[in-house]
Amino acid sequence: MGEGKHFVFSTNRPALCGYADTLVKAGPTHTGLEMKLFHFSEQKDLDTACLEEQLSLNGAACEAFEVSVLLLATASSSYLWFDQEHCPNNVRLCRILTEKVQKKINLVICPTTKKAEDSWNCHPCLSESIFGDFMRCATVRVWNGFRSDAEQVKPWPICSLALKEGETIPQPSATLAKPSVDNRLVTRWLPWLLLFGSHLVFSRWVSKVQSDQVKAQGLAHDQMKAQGVEIQKLQMQIEAQGMEIQTLKMKTQTQDVQIQALQTQQVSAGSQSFGVYCPNLFDLILLFICS
Image (cartoon, rainbow, N blue to C red; front, side, top):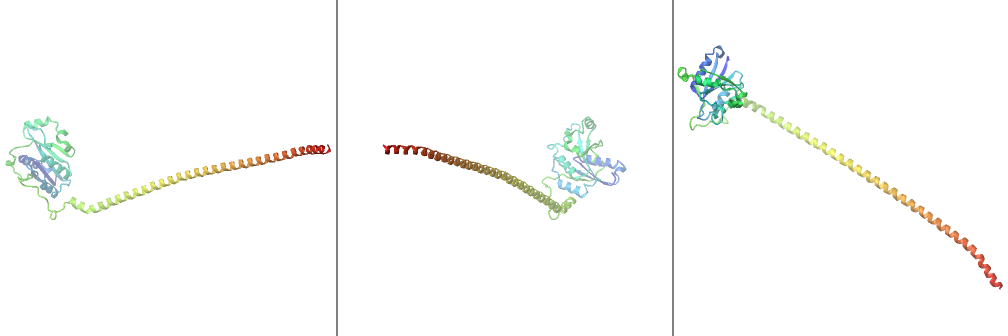
């Protein structure tokens, strides 16, 4: 791996020492490698504050940073390393590592006996039923060099991540705690992000208001157009009624002319009948006088 750092985690101290010794003996690949070993327990709470501090101080986000988690497999092992009920601290540890470390983490299977090794080799080791979601962000390896006396043969400095009984996870002071690189970036860019977000919200609000105004204007135009059509219909009805009234007036005038003509004819006929009747009357008077 050349220059860089390698963090190794396990619930078994001999496994940590034996695996570190194996990496050192691997040759030039690990020359100049800075290695740190961390022990944690499923019977005690995980010191997440210490873990995150170590990851932050040692540049876990760098490409040259590597992490290995040793998973012990016994002959009767049921491979419940990522079961939340059986191994909650292992699950929590791996989640923190996958969030903080840029490279994929190494999940190293450590058979403790030859029988355990044979049992694992017959098992579908890449099954998602064992590793769950960690299959996507981890590389599964097998290490067969476990020795129960490795810590006595060659001891290594080991950092404990297991909280002592009654000990609680320390909370960083708000005034003394130094912000990490990520926090400084957030602090620097947060005002600009807020400004951009506010501008985006305001732009969307202005766009919505303009869209509503256009819709309202279109609706008002449609209403005015409909009212204009109704007014035109009323005007046409009024004009039709006026034409009907004029027609009735013309009929009335025609009837008056006809009545006057009839009256004139009646007067003329009466005058002629009286002129015929009068000569006969004079004749009768003369006859009466002469007699």
